Length: 307
Length: 110
Image (cartoon, rainbow over all chains, first blue to last red; front, side, top):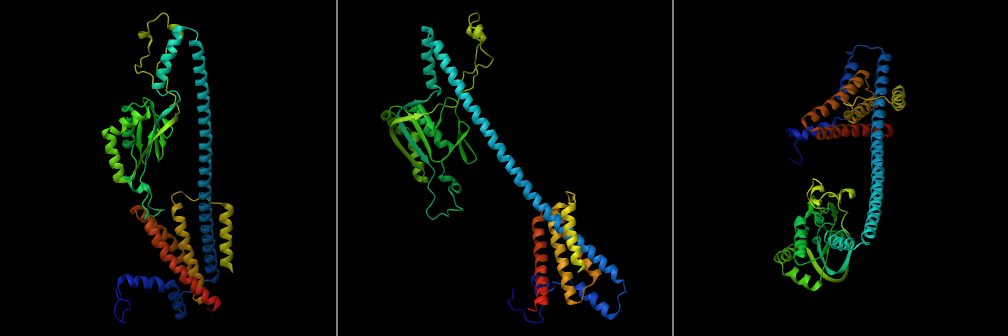
């Protein structure tokens, strides 16, 4: 487009459109009406009618302005109210959920204590108690403490020249720890003889899933965040030796190096792993039914063992 | 004087009566206000220029409001509602600024 159009040459359509918008800010009809009045061609209307019409139009203009303002203000206020209501709902429901969780924990402690007391009276009961405690260890139903390995997996550090606002680590999916990486580590740890494993304080039970949902890794359907600290209880020497002999771990270490993931491990003399989430009760037999019926027939229709 | 009183009366009426606007018309209220402002500023400038005409003012007001709302409605139907409202606001905004500058020149002689 030419910077300075010569006089007489037609300008481009876009430029003339802009000229028209910028120059003709006043409706040309006013000028035409004034010219017509000056020429005496316009019919003589009574002045009061024009004034009344103008006043009415101005009333409408004022109405439009105030109604629009009202609507905008009401909309903002409504959004604020809805937001506040939702936040208070969330707070209330999480308080209820925490409360129920506490109640559940205290009740299950009570059940355990009562059961232990009852079983401790007889030899059969003591044997059952021993079997139960080893089953509980295996099913991650109790807290455990012992020596073990602490493995840390973390996303790649953001590049030094990366924009701290727009260019976050999330934008670089190759530098992120995925569910599969955690699964490899956990499987290798089980294979190396780990007795108990937790990820960021989430204990892994026999039925715990490690999954990916969107950007977050879920362990037992609860999100865990970067960096991922995997604690495994077992003899640190043999556990570490077998773990690093695993082919999957060697591959993962290579991948971590290539993509800048952090993959550290440390031997710990004392690790404490919490109990996994309280398992659902899937199989139960009424107490009175035990002496008469054989165990096989009283079992519930769900054949899966308790998890 | 009468037009300014009318404007004030309209604002007060709207605030106190709180009339309900049909839901289908609500998206077009802001654009209609911008169009109305354009017509009002144009009328005020014409009056300062000494060429004010009641008929032209009323017709320009009504047509401005209706056409602006219609353009946005049409844009909504075609899926370019947001872009067309931007276009309407830009054009009317430039006109409002131009008229405001002319009014300023009249009032302050600068």
